[in-house]
Amino acid sequence: MSSQHARAYYTHDQVREQVQQPNVVRKKVKVQKRWVTRGEKMMYVIFAVIFLSISAYLVSYSSSLDQLNREVESLNTQIQQQTVHNKNLAFKQKELSQPERIIENAKKHGLEVQNTQVKRATDLVE
Image 1 (spheres, helix red, strand yellow):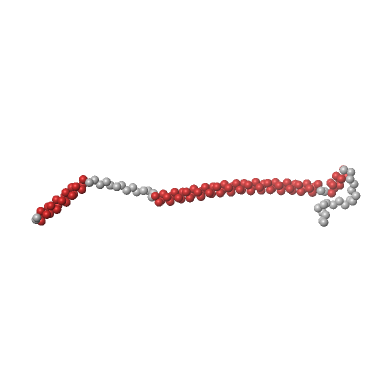
Image 2: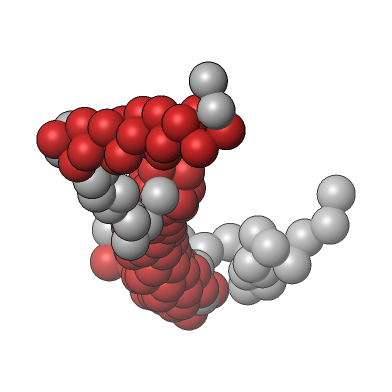
């Protein structure tokens, strides 16, 4: 075989291969670029769950704190009312334990005072 003939044969095979290649249709794979990756989505979900759980905890904590403050205020008003009531009773006790009143009440019921020295019970020291 001559060199010309060999070249023609070699180029003829290349042309045949080139002719056969266009018959094969290659499908282009379209690579979709995601705006947010899966890892980022997972991070966003985790942060959202953490944020919502902290928010729910804060709301429940502030609600219980508010309820506790209301109970404290209610107890304070009850204490003030009881203090006023106790002061009124102490004043009434002092008023009713005056010696003049006791002597007057005794005379109304027919009792006689033998000693004119009537003392208060709180003034006596044992």
